[in-house]
Amino acid sequence: MERIEIQKTYKLYIGGQFPRTESGRYYTLTDKKGKVLANICQGSRKDFRNAVVAARGAFAGWSGRNAYNRSQVLYRIAEMLEGRRSQFEAELILQGETIFAAKKEISLAIDRLVYYAGWCDKYMQVFSSVNPVQSSHFNFSLPEPSGVVAIVAPQESGFAGLISAIAPVIAGGNCCVALASEKKPLSAISFAEVLATSDLPGGVVNILTGNTKELLTHMASHMDVNALVYCGKNKDEIKLARETAANNVKRVFVYDKNWNDPAEQNPYYILDTQEIKTTWHPVENIGTSGAKY
Image (tube, rainbow, N blue to C red; front, side):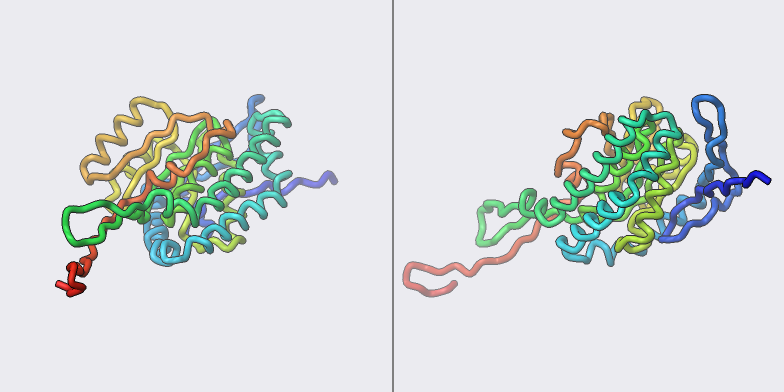
């Protein structure tokens, strides 16, 4: 008898685990010829809430790590992707990419992780400052991670776009809940398998699949999400995200970029999801006689 190939089950990634969606729903992913590639979990509001809880639980530990260690973790993820690049290339090809485009996209995603790994212990020096003040104080401003960041990954870029959105967020010490491309979700869950076996603590990155229109409102309105990164150009969705987020003073960043462009990377993407903390410290004044006062 001809052997029946075992198809991969693509699930969600929440808190370092791979649960199926609590709703039991899925959508069918097909290629250009209509051939069924996989049944993809259609994440729900409850799945998103669970992911936020996991991200918040991981935040203290991840943000408390020293920057050099975060750099090592990101570099390790890049190393693991390099060893599994043939799998990711095959998934991109299944979803309609040419062989050349798939190879280029995987290389770009790996290089982008290395790029942000290099910035982990450097962006603080670039974006912090000592401020002049009209009193006897030192005045310091420095960036600190915002907390939990919700991410709507680009639709057209199945892998490089996802990496480009996640890497600067976690490089800055944040945790995130990312909604993968609805059109090209296969690489996102495979990437979750890499994260699960890397040095990244569970809950730092959580990956959902499903419908953007359904989940966007919940991402923008959730009171324990500190920022929202939307990668796309749908004007209705952008308006919805901004109006909903305004109700809880959540910052929204809209990136309409070509993530497959090697130039589309810079440390300002790290700064976007940082809060600037300013500290005042008194200075002892010393007079001309040498006396302190």
